[in-house]
Amino acid sequence: MAIAQGQIGTTSTTIYTSTNNTAITVIFFCNTTASDATLSLNVVQSGGTSGVTNQIIKDLTIPAGDTYIMNAEKMVLANADTIQAISGTASAITASVSYVSI
Image (tube, rainbow, N blue to C red; front, side, top):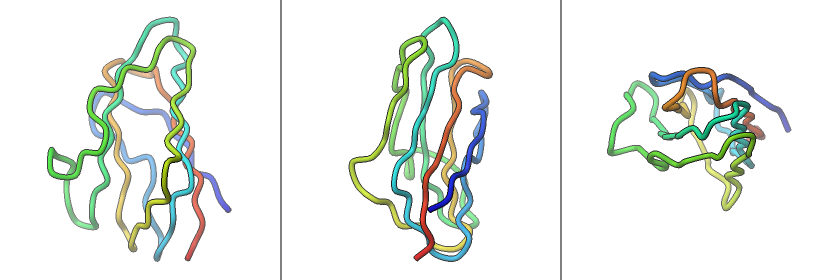
């Protein structure tokens, strides 16, 4: 198992790029600020761009100092597929992606 981590910006930010085939086991989104922050998340096929057709979370509010854990099911990604996120507040949310190669 491996981990990728990053800070989510106010424009589409790639938080994970698949190398070969990988399975996402869990993603933690931590709001490190004293104010609520929103999160939107897209799963984008290789060569694509984030948009409404690949959005899986839209404007989820993460309370100040809280963490949202996405672990309901494994998500399988092909080579160069990406997970991209946008926060409504700059430098508010960090992402930690746990994945395994398959």
